[in-house]
Length: 357
Image (cartoon, rainbow, N blue to C red):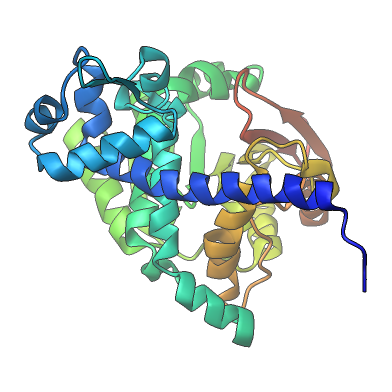
């Protein structure tokens, strides 16, 4: 019988305790996000559970139990002398809507949403296959909300300028396609900022296309259109100056076909601008990635499985830089530059060309 290192057992017991407690706190943070409790507390001074429940329009008994969970989780402070609770402003900076793309409560909220498909995923472990996109409506809506906030703060001011000369070209007027455009947040922003350019978005989910089109009409944009289309069937030649793919390629059933279609659809001096997860293709190089367990979990329970559900390759969220470069080269992109937005630990921005721009 193997002799156990009891010190190592003890350390792992502490680690498992942290994991179980963290999982429980993720659920309660999700409830705080969904009920508006963090928002209510961020606007108020130290208050009793009755006052906080009243401000949030919620049942006091549930709110009190939630508050006590947050106190023991070191998320909310409690004063036993006055019986009051307070959300420190430093914590509110990462838990409220004012946080924008830094709102970690959004990520916590994704945990129970993914858990809704857990039994389906367990069956995939046993039998193979995958879980289709239509099983993730709330999860997709959550990420659309997060992406909207990120794009509003960074797309025009930080992301587009990563490519020297691109803002000027968009101002002059070029033809732009976004594949996997989702609810159209990025294209609607670009269409408003660059009225001389022509924008088209393709998306697999018809409900997202409808939302994107409605938003464009409400903005009065006449230089953008959205189409319900499987981008693996994109069959255009030399039609665009710029093609965008924001956090899309690793979800695809057939990413190699998609990337070859992109290369064919670009004009000779065209540019492919791909945003994808900042990670290594080798797990041992992701040990220090601060969000690696979350991203691998998201991959298993969404990004990889939606690809496998379509008999796809199942690249997964953490396909990484090496694989990304390999697939881009295979598609015909000979010049690939990698850039980052300062402060963004999640995304790589690949600037890929067939020829000089």
